[in-house]
Length: 260
Image (cartoon, rainbow, N blue to C red; front, side, top):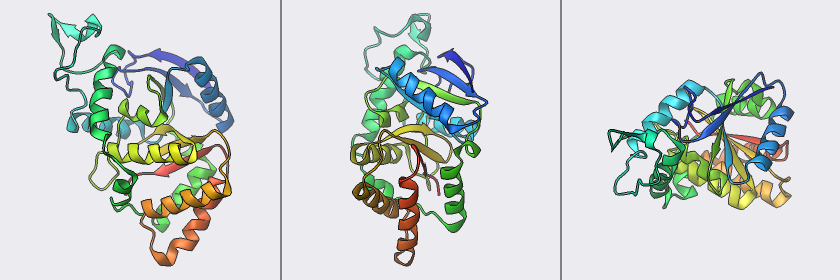
């Protein structure tokens, strides 16, 4: 696996310059990615990693629209005295966020957006996981390398909890998909209840990493949560429960589809 540090000024930085990033290319096995994640957790204890996943260009496109739609770049009345001079032109703020010194602005706006978001909001969105997509979903659980749009971006986000990294690369723009706030609510629930930390976001999927195996009780409870999230019909619940339970017991990663 090839690893390159690109800082925040790289041309295709998905945060728009708010966070430094690494670029990962030629990932040939998931174990190498896992080692990279563990190494950077130790190297950057005050930051959380957020990887790009599937369809990078589409994820960047929808993220840009999400930032505009939810006004995440608005400065408002915030104090800009700590902002880097490069964010100003002729003494005036440029009007968009492009440096790590401005991350607090995006984070403030994102916190306002998600402050009332709860898991039931995501469940009420009406997502489904049809036979076509459950096959794709299982394929990605078995072989996530087939999902990755390489090279991957690995953002270093200065937040305390993994679910807060979505402020740097918010996704979920189309009305039938989970919104950035709903994705946040899902990621927060999975971390707080089951210890699964958000590790990536793409155009269609969220990625999570387990720090320790789930208990039987946690597997059953989270499988029930997934039945609610995907609005599984009563007649299909047992079959889906078995599918979800099987993959929640496997490996270090778990991938969750957030689009219709």
